[in-house]
Every structure is written in structure tokens, then in C-alpha cells.
Image (cartoon, rainbow, N blue to C red; front, side):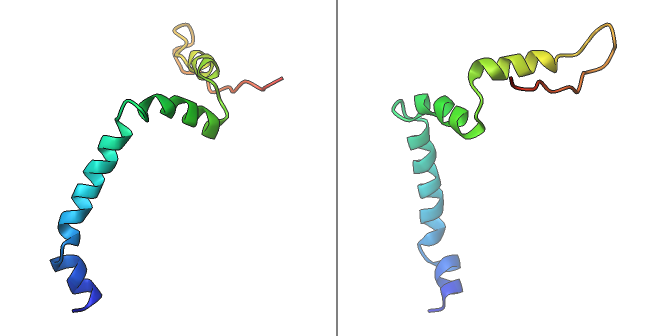
Length: 75
């Protein structure tokens, strides 16, 4: 049996969705889900407070009628 035949006709067609569902279920488990914000903060280098400040800076300015595109420099 060729590799292509094994992938398209074999148990991989059943195993791939089962593995994806198991991965999603483990990601949403109570043990892992609380770790996601810390992981995202580590990867981006931003804290939740910094992200909120950044969101306030990009909020639409009703007086100007546009969204400011400035970025804040870190001290």
C-alpha cells in the first residue's frame, strides 16, 4: 500500500478529527485555559493593563471623526 493510499483510505481519516477534538478538549480544560492569558502576555511582551491602554489610545476620537494611528513609546 502506498503512503497516499494509507492517508486517504486508512485510519488517518478517522484519527485526524479525533485528535483535533481531543486537542480542543484539552485546551478548554480547567487546567489549561487559565494559563492562556499568561502565555499570550509572555509571547507578546505586553501585560493586560498595557493592552487596555493600547485599546484606549486607538479608540475613535469623536471630535476628529477618525481613529488615531499613533503608538506609545515605552519609557
